[in-house]
Image (cartoon, rainbow, N blue to C red; front, side, top):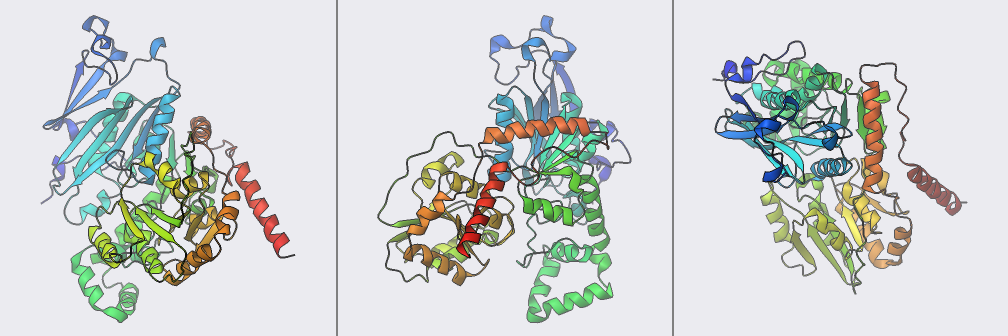
Length: 551
């Protein structure tokens, strides 16, 4: 049985969490002898130097000790802004697109003289009573890693978007560190408590959209049966969520071809609304939309992602489009080869469509020399990887390269002629496309969402129908039959920006968020709502090319 008086409470906007809700777990100590991460022993404060604004706080949770540092704001340590970055995971433990984007932002903000702290989720444990916060210093940045477990039963649905453990840990950091602004990436795992805590402390907020978490509990708008979803509905989300449980998953799968008809009957009869918690899913949809519309600035990396959120009720006046920059300071020399080298970079998971690449590749009949390299990690879907490797065990031109550190992508792109993005889910603005384009590597991608925004068919790459191995094989064949296309596409590469340009615009947005906070009459943000000027000019060049081609 779940005993709520022993657990931190949900962050309810109608009430303030009493300190007693965490007093039993957390012991707050003031210490003047702790070192700030990055300081040597000689730089630590002596007791005689200690003042309230230089206190280093230690917070102990059960058997684990965490250090919260409230840094002095004296002249010697003056910072431009104190920014708390909240994200569902952080390198090196987690290193997918959003996590890397958060790390890159933190690193460059810190390098520019801002005080930066990170709060993230390190691990979800199977024990619902386990809760601890680990703190580490990474490159001069304090990273607070939360470890917790979900409740068993119905309470878990609420905890997935409003988690009491995450809320309590975040509240403690905010109370001690007192940030000037909170920047959340995605929202997944961190939940709506980030915005609620910020509002309770009157702190401006920025949210970077990196996926569809605010609309979809599965994050990617792909249902539990593998279909792409058009957006949330209370019953549709309840049905999808229920399929995570064997109680509904196995009977539903057993229905085979009549499954959809049965679910339609269940929906219109309302027979299972209570058991499927349809009302709770409606509440999730309502609360998340309400919360996102309380954020001061919403940053979208693509026009497509912005439009999807606007379509589902997000205030368009709060959204700006800011394409992520590329962290590339030197271009590795391209390595020549006697074959055409195709490569996939990313997670090896079903929703990434790697199986479509393999199925298409194995049908190719061209005599031209070619290789296919697969770079990525299959954590959580190891069986999927094994099935694909068995399919290619007799193909001597397919190479499973495994996971590479992100900094290694540039040297791999230098030996790649064409990159493949095969996602089944509607990507928003994949980093790998921008990185490939920065290196002059054309992309073959699915004709979906943000992929089709970055890859214009027959201009800087080729598009294929999602889930269609025949369509992809046809595009492979075009490159193999006409390798001169690679050079033509390379000359029309998407205009990427350096990450420092992105950070400069982001700092401007921070100032605008501070200005807008609490002021509903602030003018619409003076930022490029449709991408950079270079991107707009690139699209115009493409339009002119199309006009000339058909004239």
